[in-house]
Amino acid sequence: MKINFPALFQTPLQKYNQFLIYGNDEEVFERTLLFLQKKFAATFESKTEEELRTPPQLKLSLFENSLPSLTLISNVTDKIIPLLEHLKEGIYVFTSQKARAQSKLVTFFSGSATSLAIAAYTAPLSSSEFEFLTQELTLPVSFQTNLFKTYQNDWGGLLSTLDKIRLFGDLREEDYSLFLQSSSLHDESGLLTQAFLLKNIKEALLCFSMANKTELIPLLRTLSRSFQTLLNLLSIKATGKAIPWTTLTPPIFFKEQPLYEKALSRWKEKEVLHFLETLLKAEQDIKFSTLNFTALERRLLHCLKS
Image 1 (tube, rainbow, N blue to C red):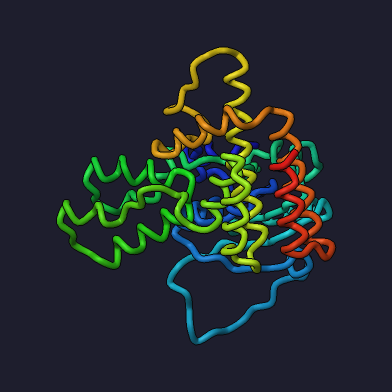
Image 2 (cartoon, rainbow, N blue to C red):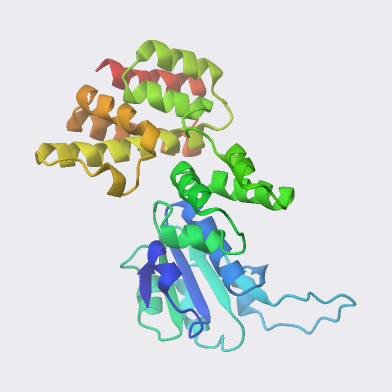
């Protein structure tokens, strides 16, 4: 069977013992692995594709893990397909960032009654995922609503906040507001995104001077997510229909709505498409060539001047 990541939270998993996570969003990979780990109440035991071909050897240990384990095999290829039918015992999780919907690997998993292929592409936080992450916590209803709105575009931030709540233990209801951020646009990358959405070159230059020069990929992906949202908004605007701000996918934090309303008047669709292509090419060049921070800054600012 094959599903998209959001459907995972409504899919019964007990009939599957092999899972394939494929796609290109690293954060959704992490979200899927966390879900499987919690759902099966298990730890991950990592193996390589080559180790899976080698017959297991009995190992004696003085220490036994009290939790069952899931066998994680990362970066698999089509060559692993002949081995899958022999994996009758245990639960296996395979990952591949190169596999796509029509590849042999995904096709095999899609056609198997005991295997599940999960497409890990960019997905906003859904109410189902939020409920899953907070299920063991007793939170005030009003706080849950605000927490979901605040972190619907920041999965990592939500996990961090939930960890803090657990550490604090018993809290008075009025104390919960301390865990909310007013907006996700307060860090350096968020401020840079805001400057680009508003086509504010002076502010963009200032934000570049404060940016973390060792984390360029996260910076590019923050910009990319925001401009993909802007592209969707421009498409809706072109139809002449009112923009359904509260039901957008991905949703927009309510305090950020004025920012996107201004961005709609400053950007044209062809400019946004060009900027998204520039971001993708920049990420590729950072990974596989020697694109430095100064060259990246010049390349992105050029998109604001055009």
